[in-house]
Image 1 (cartoon, rainbow, N blue to C red):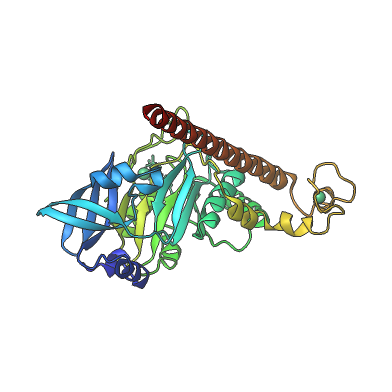
Image 2: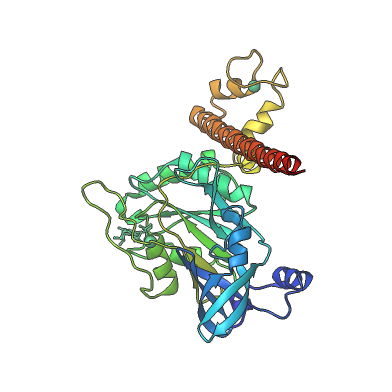
Length: 355
Ligand SMILES: Nc1nc2c(ncn2[C@@H]2O[C@H](COP(=O)(O)OP(=O)(O)OP(=O)(O)O)[C@@H](O)[C@H]2O)c(=O)[nH]1
Ligand SMILES: [Mg+2]
Ligand SMILES: [Zn+2]
């Protein structure tokens, strides 16, 4: 095992030198269990914790290690290390943290490709596909769409579903597989490149772990049948884990996501809804909201069937979420600033009272 096998490359080596970390060993975070990490390098796997300094100077979740990170290490014992610092990330896949408005949750870092997995049955949703696309594009991560469980539907249905995707989503590789019959698995294998990191994204029960097992050719990841009564996954995978695939690609399995919340994702929304941005250039008014204005090219395109109404509605919904996230963050910052001012004022008055 070399560091390169784990995805180490010139980008990370350059920043290691720039940050004067030559004296430190490095490793990649391959799993996280509540602030305890498993780090892997050429010597094997180590358990690791962060330094107190890293913890106290952390301002947000972003300052903590995430699966996929390259970290510098201080070794104490043979199988235990302290994480001294996080090497600058090449990409960060994140979403709006569930139930914590205005906060980000890092899904994984240093990802090259996002494998967006949906099954042909209940889970299938183009709106949600566009959400995942937005997350990927926001972080410069290349998306690949993987439709699973093709054995559960007929050929006609499958083609209808694939065509629906193609109408709305262009220029994204689209693969369909069955983890049961193994149809399509080889096609997906061809999109896995040596030294590149792939993160599996999707709801619980769509077959992410089954897919990894098939690509590996062995049952490494735990999978479980979905709940028959509600046709939903049981959240079998409980933590992120980085796995090496035979032909040199690196895959990160992910627990199923219930929500795909949009954070500060302007670039991602722009790429996902490129057609709307293009049309908007022909609107009569430059500040057109594309809702009720005269001469709106977007509304016209909906009326004549050039774009789907649901595509536009999904765009609006995600735009609103992005704006809401931004204003929540701004509000938080303002409060923090006020609090800082209050403390400063308190200290100053205390000082002036002294003399
Ligand atoms: N018929 C069929 N069943 C599949 C396919 N892929 C996965 N399954 C089944 O779906 C169930 C869930 O699969 P998992 O691989 O555990 O799903 P997951 O996406 O990893 O789920 P979480 O870990 O909960 O996020 C298992 O019973 C699998 O056997 C498929 O292509 N066809
Ligand atoms: Mg799983
Ligand atoms: Zn308009």
